[in-house]
Length: 242
Image (cartoon, rainbow, N blue to C red; front, side, top):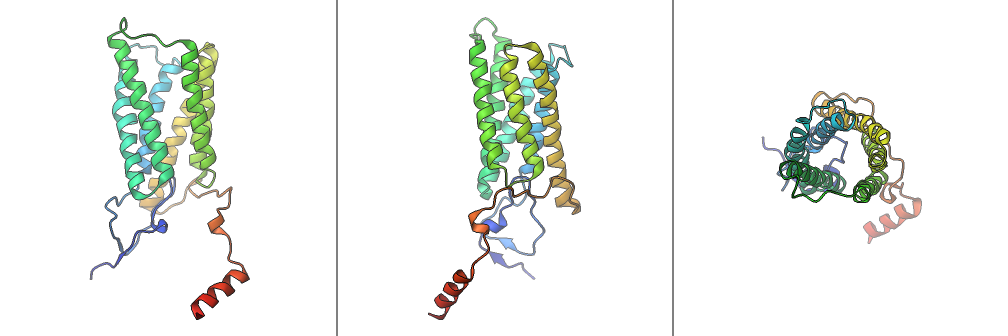
């Protein structure tokens, strides 16, 4: 017995931080069957965690910097970029935009830092004001992502809100070492939050258990979610009668 084929609609597209339930039908044209969100969150969380070992000075080994740079290029960069593209193909604009943005962030960060280690005399050093602007802009962009996530899950909101503060502290850390160290600790929390967000999605999909933070918060009600009024129902009946 073959499974019925249905058209792709918005109902078949899971949000970032959500899950795709089991179904007994195939979706026409949907060649990305899995949810790329856990993979993207793991790429972000693992790479951020490694970087925070450098920022917090938990590891003072200088050889860790090129390791983090390559890790940022491959896993945090291209890995997240792939997750973002797959999310966009599935129709998840929010997840695709977020993962693709941070994927490009890690590619740029890893490429610059590794190149500066190989050619220290040929790379123009970044001024403190330039670094502050760099982190400040990413803090602003992350704040936009956080506001857009207020209908997503609490786990995703925790990741983005802690990341906003981390970028702000990194901007201040350009001028103050203690502020930079504080950014490292909060960044480690952000990384752990991302890994937890990935875990609860996987547990929901594979085991069917809902852990804290997996359900959407829906702080804002979407206009399309409103309950049809009696006038709407009457108008619909008139159209059917006609």
